[in-house]
Length: 411
Image (cartoon, rainbow, N blue to C red; front, top):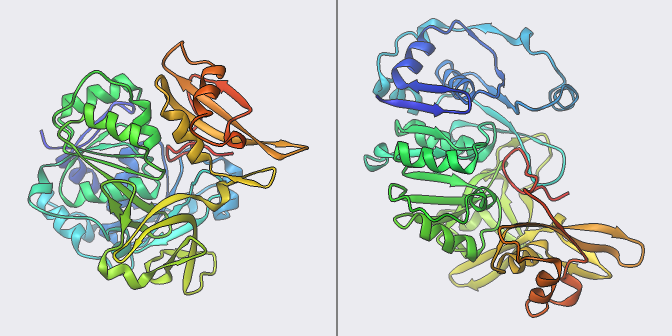
């Protein structure tokens, strides 16, 4: 069976042949796509490409007030239009569909809404060239089976979708499943590639099994710590682990085997650093409603490791630094220190207002050992970080809150 999508959460098993027949028989199109069904989202993207029309992806959990604020509408029935059947009814097989999709459409555009760890979503639009900038179509990649571990209406998920789509791969949904089901899906479907946030991977750990089918693990969206890297190496011993930097505004820009990134030669003139902040040239950007000058301030703080050749690591988001009595605290640094303690599965560091210091450091901890206590955490941290960085309030929780894209919520 040539599977296009397997989604056990929605009880879906869709073959490429079913997809093609479904598209051939589709008579209407709505550029606004809001659905919790992964297949519906993927089908609408493919249909939009075939008829060369814009598609606007809306999160399935957007409220009516959010939709009105973001788009000016809450009901999209008025945008339904008939499909030009001459553009879709000629599809005969998977190879023909992929060939047709690979020809860059002239008018097509995909619009997404950012969903970072803080802030209000922003509208960003990309053409086919920018959204598929890092898609690699090769004979070897045609054998891949993708574990889909992102929200399908956000940049990371869309880029995985296009990598799988244009290589004719099977997509196996992992996002939103419990740990047991995720490992079952990896094993039963021979998944070879997984791309996810560090938060997603940490939810799977620790694990005593090994999964030999996985060839590539990609992490992005958040900082990837050494402890998680080592644990994933044990669970997926045949996998090459890659760390990527991407944003909704620009797509994927950098990749690395660790936390140190380098710039590809063709992008050197399009990358700039100012006061330790990463700036990218407007030519790499999608279209936004925000006016962008020649250079776009990403808000990402970097540390230069070497200048020739240029290598750097990401430190934090400027907006996430915490002011404690005049000292700047990087919550990622504190999280990494806590995660180094055996028995800690996950942690979120945040701030709470304080009349004396301005803010105090707090944290939520997910522990997999009953030996972990507030006292043991503080004692451990005393030799790892400065006193003002040690959390004053420590809460033990069953799980951490995440954003729509699977990142830790920071506020």
